[in-house]
Length: 95
Image (cartoon, rainbow, N blue to C red; front, side):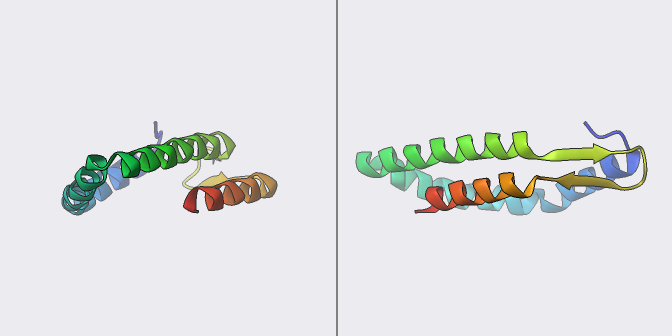
């Protein structure tokens, strides 16, 4: 995915630095997920929220622009109007 060796190296370092914390978070979240999934009402509500979040993430990924000009710098941008739409949609997911 990344062209530059520095970016590749930095992402690998980041991965190794945060992997233990992510495993711990995953373990703690799984305990809560198991509790929620036991109750049918909570499970249905959680699945509905999940569907909205997946839809929002896909929309954000489509709206993001990655610009790599072969330099040491790269940019990630989004149109302001698209950003406002995504924020408005995200607020609906949070409610």
